[in-house]
Image (cartoon, rainbow, N blue to C red; front, side, top):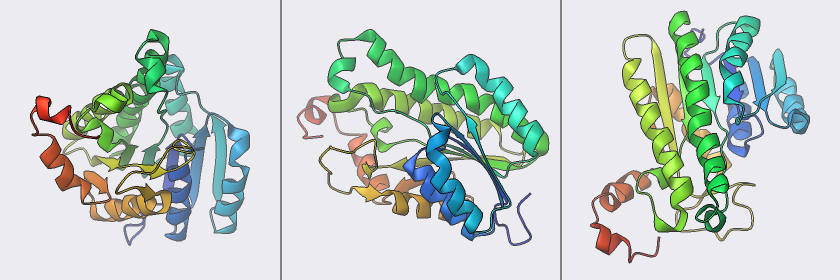
Length: 253
């Protein structure tokens, strides 16, 4: 349960190797969160964040293996984590891949890999997580989506469509949980400077992991359902969603 001041006490991160997830948990531990479970594809790469969380006052920090592709194993894994560590105030879904758009346009397996991780992987963890949070009567699912899913663009339509499906599923899940004590917060960053975008040219309104993490923490405190980073993207995408397709195709996006 959150403490008397409403601060998060326990956090499960699915995608513990994510740069945004790391920035977020380091902020939450400063706000008195004390239990962290990091589920990561490469657990051995989380040693530094474990050290940082422990030094900052966390009393429980565990790293467990997690494969976003292994959807059949997700329900049992989620049940095991809740059984072992008890209630979680926040479950952060932070895994995802961008993939290679040029390859995915012509290679069905490459396209399926992007869709499987970003969309199916999210669905396969979000359903059992929602079940457990509903049973405990409280908690928030925080999911890292993307503005790429708001209006799918020609330049990255495979990735964008996977995020569009993920985003839509989570919004519907949030609606289904109204009245249960459980919330879903969808985070829609623009271009974030992370290892996923390393080597790519930054675009206008690019942001950083620290800015996204601050927005997540603020959103949790406010009980937000959607968080845009930077905030101006909310209004920019509102316009782009209504641009006619013949015109949209000509835009440099």
